[in-house]
Figure 1 (cartoon, rainbow, N blue to C red):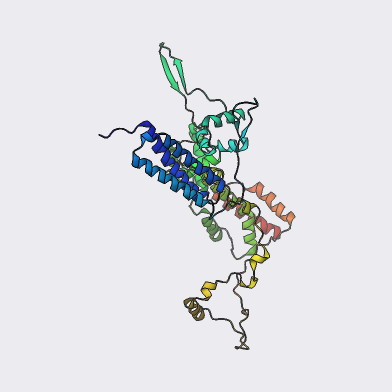
Figure 2: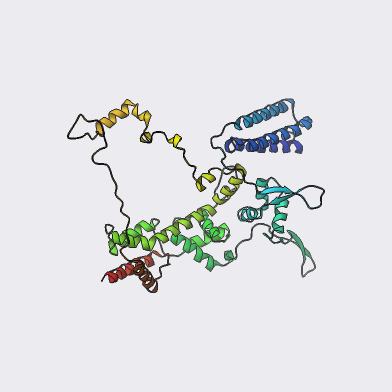
Length: 427
């Protein structure tokens, strides 16, 4: 039986594998970010210094390998400072800073941006936040209490005197609070049925995300029980496509009628947009299984990815970069694939299958713009009514049918009544 690994050596082994993973991430995500890469290189140097101070823990060949690996890490980090596949265009996001403690002496205290901390606590606990901020979980908890973002929790362990005189130990969970709806089967079934009515193909994780987007944190077993027992109306997974086909076959929708298309847009595009936004909220709030990492939601990954890896592309989305005229060159050559132009195989294929349109009056004329261009005409469905008539249509429709219902049968009635009112307006 082999001798057990000394605790100090085990700590070095664990620290090394963690350091190696951090270097790999830095090489992938921080390429070109000299400041962050230099910080990571300093961590490698600090780790190696600590190992040098405890040489007696390592075998000679192990220490030699460790030194060589540390040099390789620092060399790779140094090279990565001078090249980047995705350079940072915005300064790093700073949410934690050192501030004087107000006493004039002693250590500076760490100040965390309260807006960031409030949003971060919605998706992670203090321990997870502390890892990204490189501070202690206790610091995160204290700042959250000071800002009033959380309330002081009950003691994890307390002793209670029982009726028979004995003393029992009671443990208190310190995890995120479970929503009260978890213990209200009727209310939970209502929300789960409503989610499945809108998104019938949702599984447990997406239902959990949809509930989280509505502000509910429900255990998995409760979601499974509610989803299995849901008795809501059965809806096709392609509910909108099926709905439009049914309007055409059963309710008089004519897809070639511009006025019908306008009415269809007017009635149901807001509902389609709402479904799309609800799906996005559910997706961003559901947890993904990631190899080698803890389960995280896309919202959490985006928030802490910006913090840990730097904001990339955000500025371009907000303010598109102007293109200098000198970068455009000859506008007539934009979009031309010069490699394809020099490929004989492609040219032969084009000559056989896409003959050029020469001037029929003069076959010796130079190539010019074809007489007939390929064209797809998409006419926007213009409104056939005046603004006052549209307001009258909406007001009458609200009194007849529930236009806010997400039930597809009710929406079919919305179309039927709206079509009748439009006919009345013309008659």
